[in-house]
Length: 125
Length: 241
Image (tube, rainbow over all chains, first blue to last red; front, side, top):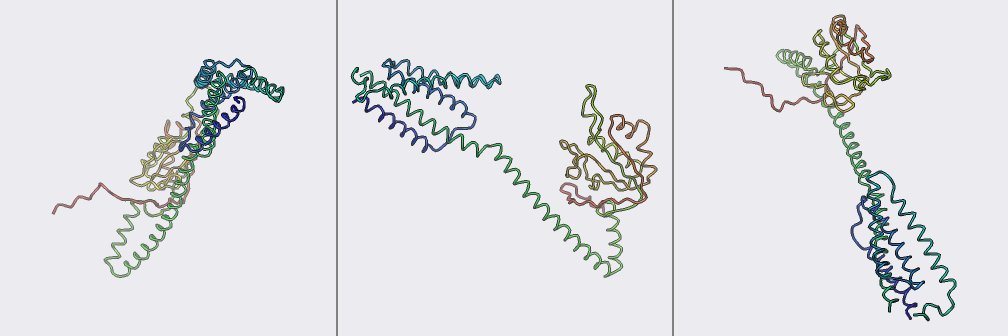
């Protein structure tokens, strides 16, 4: 039951988010876009991390929430400091998040490919 | 139960993420097109083009009006002796004001920025021609009896300024840049000597490598003043009765 609901929740929230983003009247100023971009990367990392953790059954709410906000803020701070120092420190965040992104994707991929027709997670929970 | 919490948490984060990504994509593409710097430059360029077109139109109008005026003047002069003397006075006044092109013996002075290499730690400003150099030179010419002068085609009249305007020099509120060509009508020998005075204009400018050439000519032409003269503040005093 829950494993069927999961994709539905994700797709529904993605749709709502996209629609809200499309219909909000004003855009972001160009000075803010670099920070938001890096925050998006941090958010994607958190989401994929969350997926992977759910699959491994070691998802912890506190870690997920603090990771989402903490990583985003830290990445934005790095971008800001990098701008002050004229060094592209945000690349560090890009590399770390990018690597983890692929690792988490690998976990999800293995889970989806190895899954028997009924699904092992469902039985365990 | 733990599972459903995780799903809700990931779902809400997905919502926020989808929202920000959409907004971000929209903003980035919008900002790329509507970059304030390029927009501003474009607008200023448009204004400049408009102003230039207007200037051309006005210049044509001025030419037309001048032709009309000349026709009126000759008409008027033919009508009576009185108007003939008036016309003569008018011509003299126009000559004094610099409203007519004039020709006669004079000199042509050209000033070019120095081509010398700045070897030491010398201020590079010393190697370019400045408004003050031009002003000094023309003042010397005037002192030596120049009757009519022009700087890069702009007639110098009583209201003319020679002023620094960035990398250019402003004359009659028009900007000209180096090389500067100064044409002065007057006694060529006197004017040349005034410039060649020891430690004078020529020596000083040459010292900094500024290329100055002085050419005497038996016949040079100085343009008429093309602009508009309007006195907003100066009112002639009424003669005491």
